[in-house]
Image 1 (cartoon, helix red, strand yellow):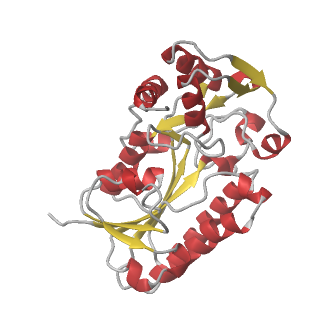
Image 2 (cartoon, rainbow, N blue to C red):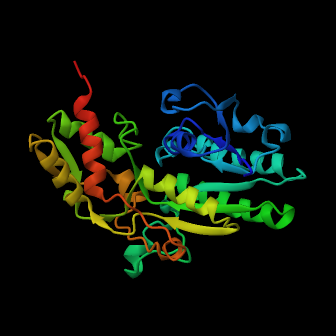
Amino acid sequence: MVTKSYLITGGYGLIGSALSNSLKGKITILARSDNHKERVKVKVKIVKKDLLNLTPKDVAGYDVIYHCASTVHNYHILDDVNIDIDTNLKGTIKLLESCKDLSKKPKIVFLSTFFVYGNVYDQNKKPITEESKTDPLGLYPATKLCAESIIKLYSRLYKIPYLICRLTNVYAETEDFNNKKKGALNYMIMLAVKGEPLNVYKGGNFKRDYIYLDDVVDALKFLDKRKVKNETFLIGNGKPVLFKDLINHIHKLTDNKSKITEIDPPEFHKVVGITNFVADTSKINKLGWKAKIDYKEGLERIVKRYKKLNFS
């Protein structure tokens, strides 16, 4: 049996680290710093380097490159627009430039986001597919969508195989719980565990597709095993849930100690935020993959872990 080799950019991130812990084969992690290195529980090769400093030697010999390095929220436009551009665009181009002349071209698996669709669901009330119109509302998804197009261009020019995986809301017990910009659901779960007030935009009367981290990793491994290439997939749970139902279940799991208050979103969120999102995941489902973890089980896992933490 041939052992596959994987390079994971952003390897200490939420998804990159979970992939590292789950994949079988030769695994190398590319990371800028040691932040969150505790997430990786297995022995891997570590390359500490910024994407912008990549060379062909860094990417040679790999079968698959999981390109997880990315910004993760819309707020950089308020303080430094170059962060999204440098990471999502320039970093991706540097990766592709490093791969284009290799004799063995690795498959680039690019982790994109459902944010590239903007509020298209609200415009036509049809579940979103891979073929739906894209209309990103913020700089973060705009750069991710642009990166998708650049990857396709390099694939046409230099025969670099790729997969684009547009992920819906990813959540997990290993996500940060102290950052409202990233992992907002985990932030609210921790507030509830502590019995602190929960301020909920629009009372939670909007639909989202939440997919647990384990299911994301399972989907990525499934597509790798099926040897799918040069395709785009929308990867989500496939079952929309009202955010207020998430909050109510969290409230129940944490003994109903938090006061829940409906608030109006700030102006910036109204400009760049998505209201409702319903995913049609039939493309990957037809290949034989479906999410296994529903929101209740996912929330129970997180609350159980958070209750064990010491806050004193």
